[in-house]
Length: 408
Image (cartoon, rainbow, N blue to C red):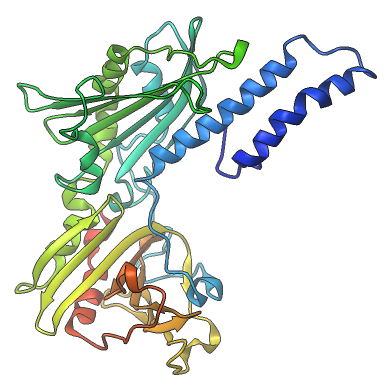
């Protein structure tokens, strides 16, 4: 099984690829000779690791949550696993129908004449629903004719969101590369074919099928080809586009689709629903785990960025309570429902402005971070005046205390 803690960077591997044959041949002078294809198999395995890591990062891009703002709030923070409010942060075990291991489901969905290797899945089945926006399973599918590295992501993207955009084809892209086909029952099938140069170090093909069911559940299947060892020629995927589409349509994914968060249970649905009446949301954007809002309140128009992740309570450093315009302040508070929260007030850190922020530490390890009036991307390198107290900050505390974040 591969992890992101891979000791080899792409540059390291290139050096490794150059030096490995000579090192093995030198070792053969003093040891019994290795199998004749040891060098080739070692190089092929290394290429597979690099491709698998790239495919995994691509499939995980929408899953990974936005990290907390860098600076002393992260570096100097102190972790605390104590009780965060009315319920222990670990929470009582939930009894849900959410599948925890998706590998058996993938095994049912792929053609039966192949074998799954290095299969694993990632789904926070025991976490609050807002953290279950996506489920993924990955493996190498091998047949006698070749191998394909598979990635399957199941989600319910909000219509018009960033996560929804991949299901649409650019009008300037030929249909042989991208095709979107609405179906009579309301489902939509999008297929994508990426053909790369044979001289590239990447696989020759990356084929993809996105099947959006009538209920909004989307199954995104990606498959790429393997390298042939002889001559370093890029090989053809062992799966046809028809087989990839069949995997996406498989009924195996139904229990996963029922367990992922709906658009209303994701950040872009929760935050507007929890704002006080009279507050207008001028714009909303984001992914399954982040939300960027522009809201109009009695105190003016404000930006509000929200992200979720899981982890321990991070309390304020001991010296953070003193007022200092260059570093800001930090304090721990209790929300109306007893949930612990951390408030970081506007400050500068190494010339970078960090806005007013509240991080709520809810049950089951859920952390919700709200940032008011973050600086624009073009202005992140120089200090920006704090927006100061506003009605929005009071509303953020109310939103963070809502039990709707804890929905199983």
